[in-house]
Amino acid sequence: MDLKDIKAIIDLMKKNSITEFELERQDSKLRLKRGVNGGPSPAPVEEPPPPIAPPQLAGMVAPPPPALAPVSTPGEIEIKSPMIGTFYRAPSPESASYVEVGAEVNPDTVVCIIEAMKVMNEIKAEVKGAITQVLVENAKPVEFGQPLFKVRPS
Image 1 (tube, helix red, strand yellow):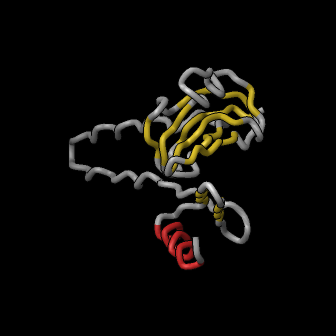
Image 2: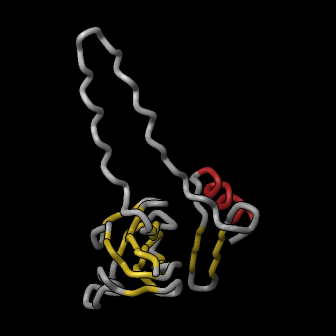
């Protein structure tokens, strides 16, 4: 792989907001990671639009606004996908899952694998706590930043 190829990969990472890229071939391995000021890039946050107040008409009562579904339980942390790929809960189809609901994890605990471009990438919890939810089915595609697990920190 030459410098021109690496620069093209970096440009694609910037255009698609990818923070990590890893490519492994028989004779070489390339791993790129980018962040803001040396730290990890913040995940984009979508905020719901402000509610629009219905016009008040004389003698009429406006219906109450619809309730918003809770995003997550307060205090829970989401483990998000650092890349686009296929989510696997276990190292092989015959093996047990890395973690189940209720499992205690620490920052170095491998919680799943994401396959991207035929490369198996181990995803670590990066937090200490207990798994409260598994949000993705095994062998399903995931997007960058998609929540994979919820963790109650300890």
